[in-house]
Image (tube, rainbow, N blue to C red; front, top):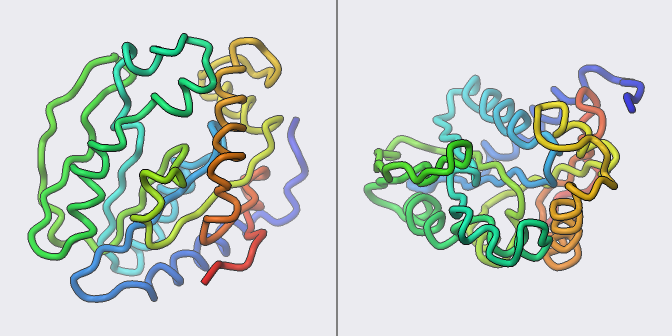
Length: 228
């Protein structure tokens, strides 16, 4: 269901606010690692792309990447069953490879060689882990689900959690060609219940630097005070 959009420029102000705070966090020889987290259909990729664009307009060198480049193959993702919410939460991504190949090299000073992806989930095939230089990168803007898991949350300098109701997120994702628009459809149980497991276990609302209500795209706005 579409909602009224009371303030078409509120999203821009939110992005500008976050970009200013990220810019202030920069320091020599340190890449600021920024996570954009949220459930499936929350609008993470678009939000992260726009945040990166705002930073780049400020003259900041930005690297964009996504957890979707670090999927496990189906034999691992579905080892608990194709409908398993626990499998979705625990087995979707290769966090060891993500830390080793991308996040930890950026977190260290000195020469930085990083790998942006190791798997193409659309064709279910691994891709060559090609290393590239990130020597000039000042900020990583990284999007994906489950980014406040224990395996990752110690590495983020700053993080955003996009808060979106399931009645909005599931139809939004389906509108992009992914799944059934009905949140109660059996095909969505793996994802809806897996996300609920994540929310209850990892409490991203409490751990994120910023929580942004992204139910109405044009009206994306902060709902919390940044944590210290």
